[in-house]
Length: 413
Image (cartoon, rainbow, N blue to C red):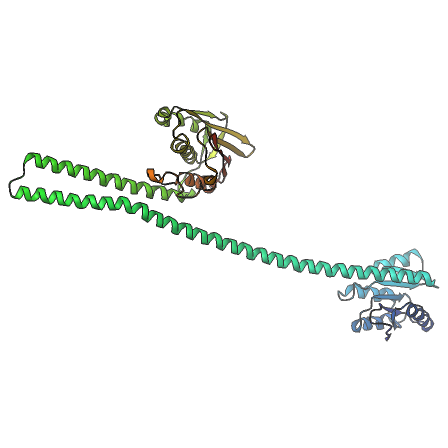
């Protein structure tokens, strides 16, 4: 193969023809237009040439010795390194079958011999431009693929960092919970220890009095009263500790310890007015329940009942301070495979600065009244972890608070 360079930027065209005059004529036409030109006298030499230098386009004669143009084009197409090179056939055979065969073996176009200069140059320029566009598109696609790979890697790293942050937050939350528990439990335990120590002193005094046979009836009764009072303090303090521990245990919900049953949600709800009869009557509150009678769930009836109890207790404890009388409502509707439950009260509402914290463990505005602040946190965990649902709160201060839950109709263990 003989290559003649016109300019470093010029496109390289390989002419494959066994006719020397055709090679010279075609070469002159292309060089005059600024192309670099390479030549080969048969298909076999053309294949050897492209292994050394890759042309931008090949002008291929069809009828040649050793290896014809069709076979050479077929082998170029079979090689991943050369299949992108556009091949234009130069042929005097313009029958339909020949043209069809040329396209079948991978040719992109053909020019009939004897060729017209204008037509030849138009086809050469068009296919070179098209090939360069294809190369640019391929390069862009490769860059895009690389960017997508990098973006995927970055997203994976971001997810990993996010997971680390979540795990760190859990550890911080756990640490805060342990500090809180130590603080809250320390007080009733301290009271219990003080009362127990006081009991030891009273009992020792009684024993000494009995030993000295000077224990009077009035003194004995007084000592017994003191022991009973101290025992009551210890019992109340230990009960407070047990309640705190019990509430903390409920923060960790476990499906495996619960049973799935098919039940009527309306029957489940109709227990509530009787269950809360006394506290509702004392606060002059009316509980209204609306639920389709035909609605049955395949889920956890005890968890549903617990969720409603938490909501009602939350209203009783926080919604009606300084307010006598009101309405609580539970509305249930079905949306295909889900139910939507809206629980609302017309109480005091929630302050804006508190609305984002209500589901956090140990958040309460009534710490001074001995409230632990776990009720809504337990509700959130039950809805999310056991019932596989969603819950959010909407409140307008001074008017109303609503909890909306979206839950699946059916569960499988």
